[in-house]
Length: 70
Image (cartoon, rainbow, N blue to C red):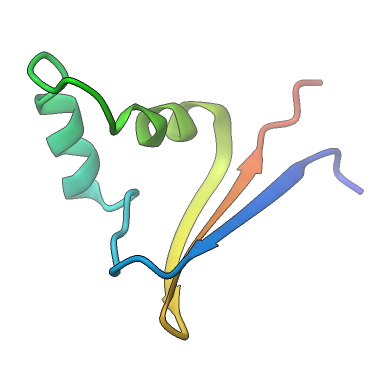
């Protein structure tokens, strides 16, 4: 109805909140030294209207809502 698109991803990996404040700060601080990984978290923050995490029923759940480009 509002032109937004939402995406939900779930996995059974150990609990990990990629959107926690400390996680993002750590990834940004290590940007110069890391070889790979972690860039998707930063990209998701920049391209989405909302990015939520929950650990439910033994699963990590990430829900992204993409910004309306209009």
